[in-house]
Length: 152
Ligand code: RTP
Ligand code: MG
Image 1 (cartoon, protein in one colour):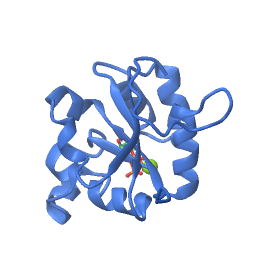
Image 2 (tube, rainbow, N blue to C red; image 1 turned 135 degrees about the vertical axis):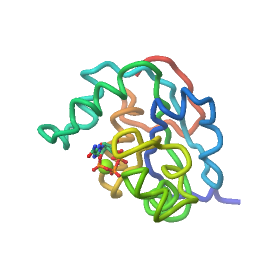
Image 3 (cartoon, rainbow, N blue to C red; image 1 turned 30 degrees about the vertical axis):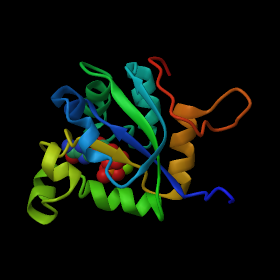
Image 4 (cartoon, rainbow, N blue to C red; image 1 turned 120 degrees about the horizontal axis):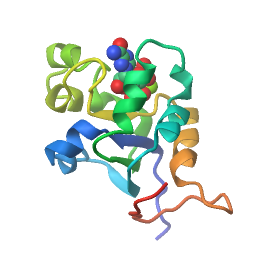
């Protein structure tokens, strides 16, 4: 039988969930095509969130995701993966998420507008760019296996 190729998105489990030890609880319903646990440097964090350079929250955000705990970078697969993961995570601000989408991941695990538990690609283009940022290999191929390594 031919292998079914599902659409992919990029997800990040941010330090607040990892320090709570509950990171496994948020991935229900998604196939994990690849994952890495990484302690980002500040330069890697700034590069990943380059689109937000200059915004008021940029320094707080990049310091936070490169400090204290590591993060987990994931390639997730599901029908309509980008939208499905954005739907699962809920609004950016966890306070708003608790009011408007109480079952969402950010409502259940996040704290406020910055400490919000998870990241999700906002488009197919972002997903490909973000997957490449964390998972590209020297020959340009993408891993389709479970990968765990400590360094980006
Ligand atoms: P993400 O990229 O992490 O999935 O979040 P998003 O699309 O829902 O929101 P985005 O505007 O891309 O913001 C990126 C991350 O920056 C932090 N943030 N803090 N305090 C604030 O006003 C603020 N706004 C954004 C959040 O951690 C957000 O996920
Ligand atoms: Mg975003």
